[in-house]
Amino acid sequence: MRTFESLTERELLALAITLEEEDERVYGDFADGFRENYPATAELFQGMRDEESGHRRRLIELFQQRFGNHIPLIRRQDVRGFVDRRPIWLLRPLPLDKVRAHVASMEMETRRFYEKASGRSKDAGIRQLLDDLALEERAHRDRAEELGKDKLTNTAIQEEAETNRRLFVLQVVQPGLAGLMDGSVSTLAPVFAAAVATHTSWNAFLVGLAASIGAGISMGFAEALSDDGSMTGRGHPWARGLICGAMTTLGGIGHTLPFLLPGYQAAMTAAIGVVIVELGVISWIRNRYMDTSPVSAVLQVGLGGVLVFLTGILIGSS
Image (cartoon, rainbow, N blue to C red; front, side, top):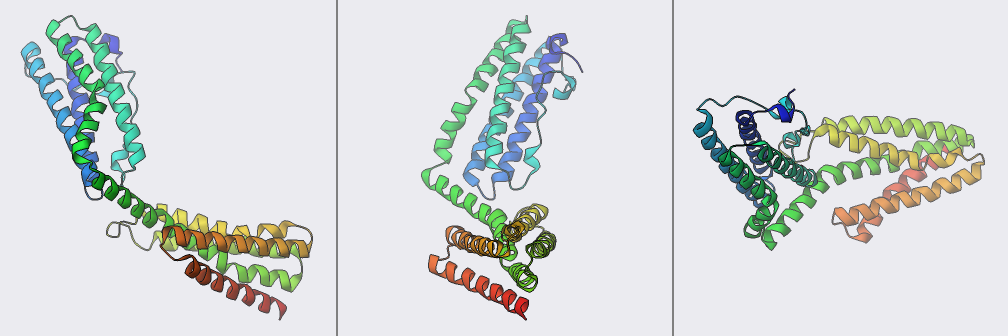
């Protein structure tokens, strides 16, 4: 790798052209990634892409005037001091918070490059252009906000917020809720059946631990293999599977941990209390994110939980 100080003016301009082309393509990828779900944000990034394209054309024109038509390929990874950017534009859907942080980092790094390059240039024309581009990069965020005023109207912002909420529910809440319900409800029967049948907390704990982990693995694979998310918009299948499997295990472990208490009666009382809390949390999530009325959520979840709990008690007592 070359040091920044060792670059000639010709090499500095060539590197600037490569950087602008890279930033232009990154903004283009952001625009493409947001176009389906966030069209107003996509237009904003398209405008930023056009700005970077203008910067690149001005740099190429100056390079051709000073050094001819051949522009050597000098990339950011060839020079020490540049940030190693993670390719978040390859993700689908794009995470808005990470994109904002990425853009802020890009703008700061490019601006500092132009300021340092200008300080090393002895050619008045090159120094003038680099100073101009540094000023434009410094004001890039302000211009993006001005562009957003035209594109991101209140209606568009509300629509994108609703889309973001819908995707969150589809990709995170739904698989997580399915896992939590399965883990909290389906493991009730084996755990309490073992507790009632043996009157030994440790046996109930082992059964609950095995049932929770086994159910988590099963639900995780079932969710991951259900569809690839390309048509449904449900996100990456293995991410959904991980969320579903983890929440399934968590749901079962919750009312299993009380059986670590040495006393059978104390463990049973604590476990029943945890079950009530778990069913309450599931009802709240269904009401909060799935637009289910509070009464319907409590009745649906509570009825299922009570039936499974009674099944475990009856089997354990037989």
